[in-house]
Image (tube, rainbow, N blue to C red; front, side, top):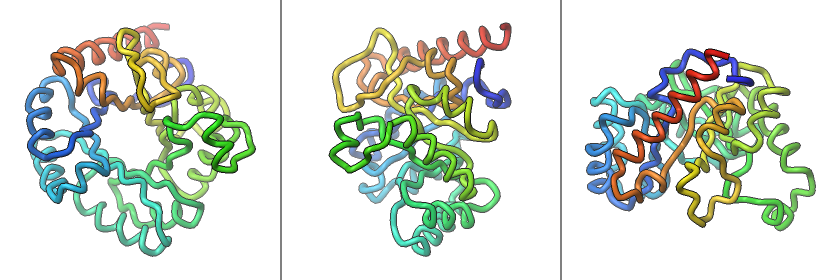
Length: 245
């Protein structure tokens, strides 16, 4: 890739499918349909409210899939640390933190040998107006860069960042940073929703994203497996083109 230094990621694992559904049964049906196309799954707040999410994590790991637990931990640092330590025992690959420096440090110290902690920079559902409402007077890019630098200083492994800010992250932050990019919308699937800062898979990868999180464009497609296969093909083409350049 033009900006990324991480070439050790299996191509088929760069796509992370967001299991944003209200029941474990629905999640299982999607996993079954997507098993040949998706090897990395993200579980968020909605599924964890069902009471069956950890069982689903175990099932995914038994299928040799990878798991991203997206709970955006934000609490007293000691509580965050203990929660991350318990999660690290489950076998997940990624977990998110959305807190201050002390929270990020607590998460990083408790993550163990295999769990990687990703700091959320700025939610992709936020735009300039939203940040003004929240009292952030700084430029959005500056906020993302500041959050990324602080995450690395705290011992986090990477960040969750919109594809619109990835290029500057790659130019100005240490290359060890893992960059996971949500808000991915294929060119032919740019429906209006609450994601305001979105990019295509190819654009995100060209800017230096390591992993792409895709939810609705796959989940809501008439044929989710075909939609996932098309995105995987686009990812493969982008990675191959970058390797050849």
